[in-house]
Image 1 (spheres, rainbow, N blue to C red):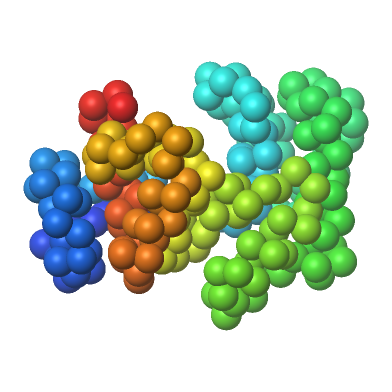
Image 2 (cartoon, rainbow, N blue to C red; image 1 turned 90 degrees about the vertical axis):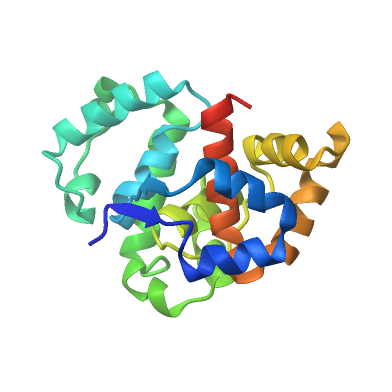
Amino acid sequence: MNTTWQISKQDQRVQQLMRKDAILVSLIEDIGDIERNLRPDPLKSIVRSIVGQQISVKAAVAIFDRLTQKINDDWSVDTVSKLTEEDMVEIGLSKPKQKYLSNLIEHINENELEFSQFDKLSNEAIIKQLTAVKGIGKWTAEVFLIFTMQREDVVPIDDVGLQRAAKHLYKVPDDKGKELLKKCQITWGDQATIGCLYLWAYIHKYNI
């Protein structure tokens, strides 16, 4: 089970991307190789996303660490489903997030969400299953596709960081972020995720 995603600028996929997008070439040359942490455990990945919604990164890390300790890092449906309301309050989960967690477990138990089948499903089918769970939006599902499924043709159009980075890189008006990412998705095609990874690296390197 891979825990990191290593991308060399010499990879064939990166070279293909560079042939498609001349502006991205200079960024890829500047950033070089990329290594990103993956979230290979699907249940842990989704729970982590739910925990992190609408709170600071620092608070999200603290709550997620307490949750991990509470279940002894056993990310099974059975263990997570045994968390009581008192447990979740102690961990620091808000009422809405407690409901989201319960809804997630319910979907899994009723086989409406089958992580074991995801490798066989299209991006659209996975997004449809995930967003049927309360508290999971399209952006969360797309991030799951990237960092858990390692799908290489995904652009989270609603990601404000990616929008900001793309506008900065391609020098377009402030109100064109989503439209620009949609165009990038078409241009980048099967290497779209790699384009996003470089835009995220751009953000971190230059505080875009």
